[in-house]
Image 1 (cartoon, rainbow, N blue to C red):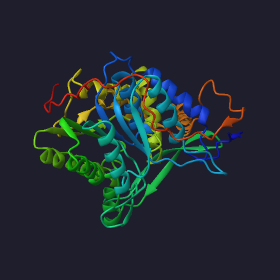
Image 2: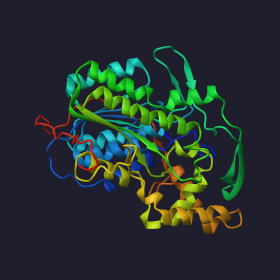
Image 3: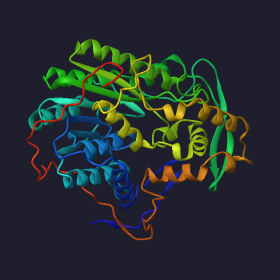
Image 4: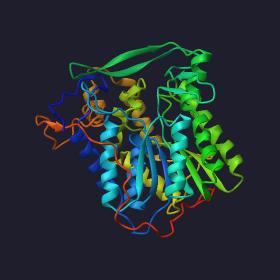
Length: 418
């Protein structure tokens, strides 16, 4: 037991401490937002890489609750130390495991560097021993660096434009007061671009497919998806046309390479999600201001990560059309990229300044959403009460409900409709 009175200790959008009670409450809220289960038949066997945060967490919770997904989730989270709490994803994973067990779903979690051969070997071994062939692999990793297991070289990603300088508005908080600042970034060089592709492109995704295929663990009709983003022309210079965009293009190229490797026995897609407040997105310059304006414009039409994960699962199971674009990408971002929405966002973006930001962007909502990523700013949580910070990583415990019935395979169509 380790009861602590915790303080956020944040620097801007980065929090050095997470609140376990708040993280638990966030997961509970996401679980309740997920669709009700359609039945008690065991769902597909899935491997979720990046299951503790962002879209990976949302896809995990929707898969567990609505589709009784079985399998394994992988995350890389820091344990508690004498000075700091465990990472927010550690606490979120612990609660996710409790909810899965309570629902009688057989799903386990592995904490480790998904880029490493050791974690791949352990994950493949666990899946083979406990579940057999895999129906679905969801790849949702955002990382600052990657060690290439083949060469040992450590690659560091950068968020920079390509070709020309980037100058744009950005959202900053001074003593809690929002204002519009100015951002200037120099373009990346070729080495920085290539390193970012190595970290955030499709190389590791391909290695995971190879690892499963080499052990005969790809089910007939296997499907894999990797989460991506396109976004507005407002943020394109720093996102889609920048170093991250180069990595996302490599991810799309990798999907085509995987499809060639699968030879019709399965299919790979990248998934273009809509904007969201995640630990990864807060690191991207200008995205905070853009997202705050987008939320103000869309209002009730805003789709959070759980909404979009539920939409993705409907498409993967054949309950809805895949919704492919001309690049064979599954598009979940129609609500964001609606021409009227983008026109309204652009109009606000062009005129917004520190004097008008309160009317133009949901800055308070954005700041609170960032806090909730770490378990802070969660309604109903008493932050004045000492919290239990020593929470064990989920043990591999089989649920009491039998899961021996045949699985419900993920629909394997590769065309525009399921």
